[in-house]
Image (cartoon, one colour):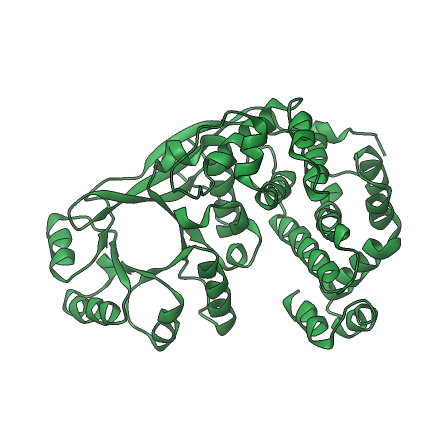
Length: 412
C-alpha cells in the first residue's frame, strides 16, 4: 500500500455557511435565532442527512463563525435528530444558550424522555418541533420539554385555539412557526402564543466564515494533554504551534457560560482554556477528528457516531471499575475515538497508528487488542456485533457491580 501521510487528509481553508432566522416575542423583539444548515451562499441545503446537517451547524457555528457573531447574546435554536440527542455532541455547546429542537421524525419514547431530563438537568431547554395536533404521544411527552413549536400553516384555523390552549394549560412556551402573513401573526398573539417565527418577520439570513482545519497530529497532542490533566501552561504551549486550533479554542471559550453571565475578554491562552473547560475541549477535538474537507462529518457518518459510542463505553467502563485506574478514564475515551479514525482517513491501520503521537498503551490497544484498553475495545466490538452475552462475560470481572454491568451493556 502506498504510504500517505495523515496530514494529506487535512483540509485547508474552506468557506462555511450557517443560516439564522430570528424568533420574536409578542412585542416583536428578537429573542433568539434558529440556526440552519446551508452548504453554500444561496438558500440551498443539499445534504439530506439530519445528523450531518446538525453536526455541521455546530462545528461551523461554534468553531468557524462564532456564536457571538451569529446570535450575539440571544439564544440559539438547533434542530436535533435522535442520534445527535443521544451523542456527546451536545457537551460542546453552552447549555444555557441553546434550545434543542426535537425533530418530528424522532419517536417520543420513554428512553428519549429520560435523555431529555438529562439534557435539561445540564441546562438546555428542549423544544418539540412541527406540532400540528395534540396526539397521545405528545400529551405524554409534554413534561419532558419546555417549548412547543406549532406548525402554523398546517393546523386548521378552527383547531388552533384549542391546541394553543392545551399547550398553555400544560405550562409550555408556545412558538408559532412558519408565520407568513400579518393576519397569522395577529391571530397567534390573540391566542396567547409566546414566540413567533416565519417569513412574515424575516427570511433566514446566511452568514459565512472560513473553516480552518487544524492538523490531525495537533488535535491529538492537545487531546492527550487535556485527557492527562496536564497543566494549562503545557496545553497552551502546545497550542502556540497551531494557530488554527487557537482560533477554534477562542471561539469555544467565547461561547462558554460565565458565572456572572457576561462575556469575558480573553487575554491569554490559559484563560481561554480555563473558560472552555477541559471536557468541552476534549469533546470538541473528538468532533474535529471526524471532519472532512467539506466541513461535514466523514462520508460514512455512522462511523463518527460509532467511534463516539466506543469512546463513551470505554470511559464509563473504567469509571465502573470502582477502585480501578482513574487516570485511564480520559485515555480510554481517546482510544475509542481513535480506533476507527484510520477508516475515516482511508489508511491502513498500522501505518496510520505509527504516525500518531500517542502512548504505547493506546497503540497496543488499537493494533493488537492488548492491555485493559484493548480488552475494552474487544468487548465494544462484541456489542457492535450484537453478542451482548459474550460481552457481559468478559466485562463482568472488570466492573464493581452487576447493576453497573447491566447499565453498560444496555446503554451501548
